[in-house]
Length: 472
Image (cartoon, rainbow, N blue to C red):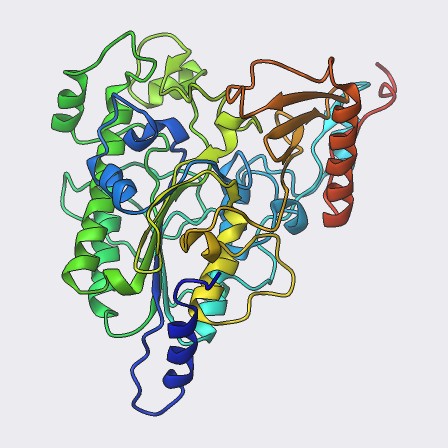
């Protein structure tokens, strides 16, 4: 099957090398939400969250119904998106922040009790590897990263010509000024961060309409702190159904502003005549956090009721952010624009690392020699298969779990007790029925496949304190 745009891109690359020739290679816009769950959007079944722009994007684009983040938390997931490498191979598997285990393993082992698991050490920033920024910039693209980075210091070396609001923080100081962000002066009182980042993105599109570009618009929404324009919150509160597991008006308002951002970007691409020459991708960095458990954290959101305080629900998927169950790693994903030859719905499992080889294929450049993703252009062209059988997840922190999805089977391995759960996602997308007790041989086979992958990627594993510390 011929890949969409394969011949036009090849000819455009040749022509671009000729003096005065028009460069007609496709441009790319990647919009990344923060902590938006798979079930938080209308096109995946949400009734409470109003997402008309995303629903229209889904209606006219290609929805990947079984898309996955590479990690159930943001820093490693974003690293995978930008590099095409699994977080395990990058040794970048934890959320960056005050308690990131970048060193001190021996001290943490000494402080642990007998039998306790201790997180492995991880990097505090992305290593010097090729990124979508460096690959496309070196091929003549104008590149921009606007919004949340959270992959440590060094974004200036990651290939993005324009960097606005690219902090190392995991969450904003607030959604209203003062933002205290680099290259993002405060706007007038009442300005909303989601709208402001979108303004900056639209300015980039206007200024670079005559050349191929890569724009990453990395929103903070709907990550906490839960803040949104008061009038919009009141409007969402007016339609709350307490029987709907999604009923938080603050969170719904944040999603509506995020949805409006997507609509504005799409409308600008169409107005500038860029839609037929641009691939627009919308996704999230991991599944949604479903509740605020700590009273102190809840009070920071202006919440007076006792914890847990409901934010959203990932149902019918199990669990949420920080877990390798479906609710933590399955995310909404839509591709739209000229390179999408066959709009509709695709049930082939994909993962965040797939974006880098896909953009390279569409731009007519060679992908990195080492990569963990697959080129999705066959699916954009109407295909229904990729040359891989399994997806892998490794999160040796907090929940201490790893997983492999092989076809419709998914095995979740717990490092805490060395046991596995086995699920049939086709029959049981909510991962409610553990088949491991009735299929022990199959569970063992998938465990061995997972361990082989961990060995191949050099994944860091949690360490167990075997003996009690002296004096205890």
